[in-house]
Image (cartoon, rainbow, N blue to C red; front, side, top):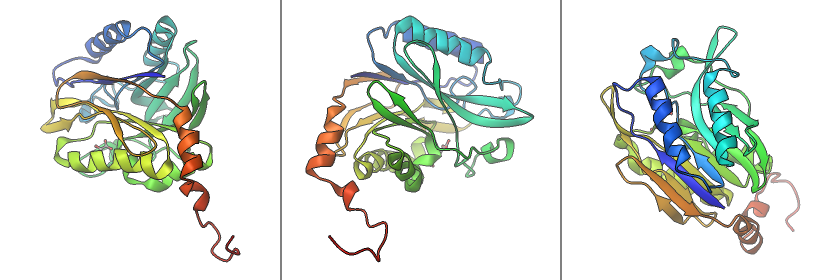
Length: 263
Ligand SMILES: O=C(O)CCC(=O)C(=O)O
């Protein structure tokens, strides 16, 4: 399974339209990938809170239409990261996954809104549903940035069958070490592949951390971006998930009922 994670630079003065055009031409050069992953609210820019309401769109709006067409054009699963979704007067940080036929097969509204140096929690409404979606490569769980700090979300995804964890992010450089640890920990403890996409650049006084990752179910970082805009590419073998879960079955050793007899 060939993977490409687009680690975008968020340039403060770049418009949403210009950013979408730029990402589309990056994707055009990625034919032959099985999965392409993008970062969090990259079209508006995560820290451009003053643009959230004006640049919000409904789920059937231009953003979703364009990336549905793009997925079909390049014949890849496309996790287009998140955008500001407008629905019934409320706003959400919603990520979207398309199949190679261009079908919108997964949407996820960020559950843990970030409230440290961020206005996200004041403008947006949090999601309340876990998203795990069937693909040709296994079941995929969707999550967003700050969610990484909440292991229970990923355990729920695993309980729903998740084998690959996709994380869309705009994680600051100031906490880069946390980012790396959480990427590895969520993959390792859940015996899943984890594929993340983070932004780089300096925007609204925040230095974004990059280091988008692909981590295998044994906790090994297979590929990582650095501090610059780049496309992190690697190939993974999804059959490794069942193999590792079989030879080192820690997920089966969970004690869900402490009163149950030990076997
Ligand atoms: O948890 C962190 O340190 C960063 C989270 C974040 O930037 C976000 O959720 O957008």
